[in-house]
Amino acid sequence: MSIGNSPEDDRPSIGRALQQARIAAGLTVEEVSSSTRVRIPIVHAIEQDDFSRCGGDVYARGHIRTLARAVGLDPEPLVEEYDADHGGRPAPTPAAPLFEAERIRSEPRRPNWTAAMVTAIVAVVGFVGFTLFSGEDEPTNTAQVAEGSKPDKTAAKPTTTKPAAPKPVPSESAIAAAPRDKVTVKLSADRGKSWISVKDHNGRGLFDGLLLQGESKTFQDKERIDLVLGDAGAISLFVNGKQVEDRFGPGQVERLSYTKGDPEAG
Image (cartoon, rainbow, N blue to C red; front, side, top):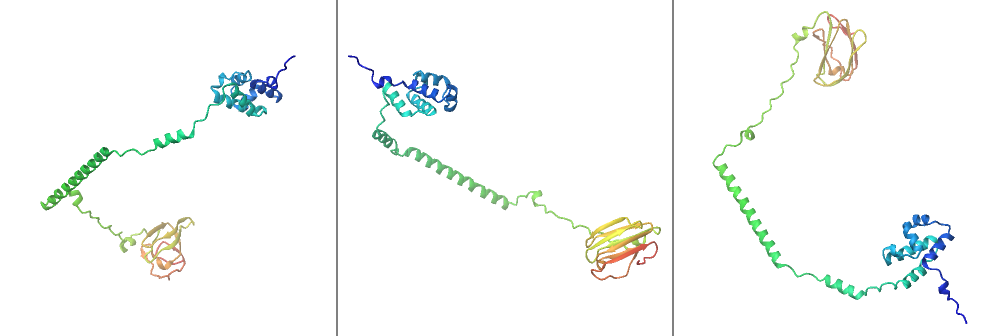
């Protein structure tokens, strides 16, 4: 009578099962290592049922699960076989002792009355010192003022600012001193601002812009000066040393030309 082998004896080992599944999936060790990030030497060792390079039972179980999923196997039967061959998993730690240890650690500490008293004394001493120091400063300053101490010359000296001297207004004699061999035109915005345009006898622009109230400008040419006054009523006009007495209305636009000699409006 012969005794045949049991089905369990015909079942391949963990490493052999992983190797056969890898080959059936058409994968190399390098490809499995790349997809699982398990180093190539460890993959070879596990396929030879050598788990010493895994670094312990926890890592060995993790590698078995990772490799099994990579080659299409159910990892749980392999992990159970590993536990059966290596003494099973460690018994879980009872929850009651952990809870008890946690409860013991969380008990509040007794207050340190010595440290609290030292802190309070230091605070009181600091407050008293600050009060005395602050109180000494006030009588000293009051005594100095009562004795009539000389203040700092720099701080007590008032700063005086001289008013700006008014701009000199050209006298009629100065205007009359305009050269006779040229055309001299002076524009003063005495009654408001005005846009003005000034050109010489060649049509070259001498000025084109806004003359603000209080401003004056003087122009000269050897033959003729042409003017455009945007608001002639705001402008006082002096030509060749003489004031033009014509009064223009506010907002009135005037086009004027002047040559040498007595002023004549063009």
